[in-house]
Image (tube, one colour):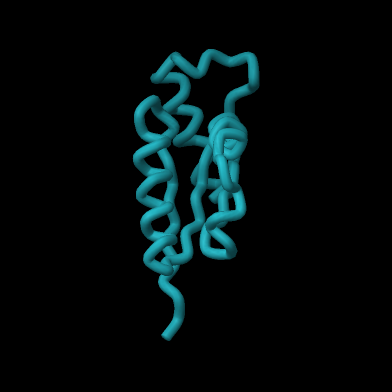
Length: 93
């Protein structure tokens, strides 16, 4: 039987990253392959804070995609941020 595969697409808002990452880690512990999509900005923060980056083996793949905003754009402007995500991310996926 093939290994189950789940694609996790994170909405990059405060309070969403850690719970979804924990869910992905629990799926991996159950033998499920997980592809974890995150924005470039959050990907750098998440991967730099992982204590044991190799603990997931081949079962977790972390992928970053652009949110469509420039580094100097205000990511706290939720309207602009959401609009940019909706226009940019589906084409990248």
